[in-house]
Image (cartoon, rainbow, N blue to C red; front, side, top):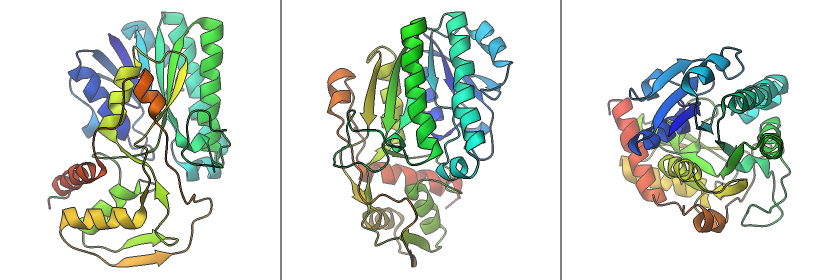
Length: 310
């Protein structure tokens, strides 16, 4: 199958590209390599065709004319909650107008399906745990709002233009290639800090829990969704919450030494407990998380050891 991966030079997107190529698909990547977005040339699989381009660009039409993708894995996004709050217009331009540019070209050139990387951020603070596909979506940031709005654009496009879709709502994704700088995942930040023997900051009491899912497992969900789950949304996570304190202890075990912990107050908007019910994905996509948190942290530490020459 010919597949276009938007954001395919990014952290999650590059893992999606790898698994698609390994499965025998023909892959093209569109990524603008925005410094705040995580796209890096070193993440680009040489077996894929790469286009250095923003999804908002009019020239995207030329890519569609040339590649004629049968399916799209759409991961390109303004992904920072902070940036979305500071500059909601930019967030909407990328996540909404960029999406519409993709959808219009997909319809024009006969693309059959789009697999969309949505987010648990669309839920905001849920009333009860675990979160599932029927949990009310009450996003608390422009980023969460645009991710939720995308799901509704996809439903409209399917009804109006018969473009099929599957939306995947991720938990907290971690693993190799995650940028440990800026607004990154705590596992990447902690792994680098501990390897460099620098302090780590733990907010609140450190017992707040999130559902951490390995990037390779997320990539496999994208692969399966190419041919399954039409018109549906799925939670993609592990079903378990893990505290920040437990993450620190686990990473210390894999690195082999402790570092200073700097305690800090609760961050505005931080949620104390989130984990997901992923039984729908298991039943309908044949997907469930396979990489344990301990194994995933070990792989992540090994990646950062190599990148830091440790």
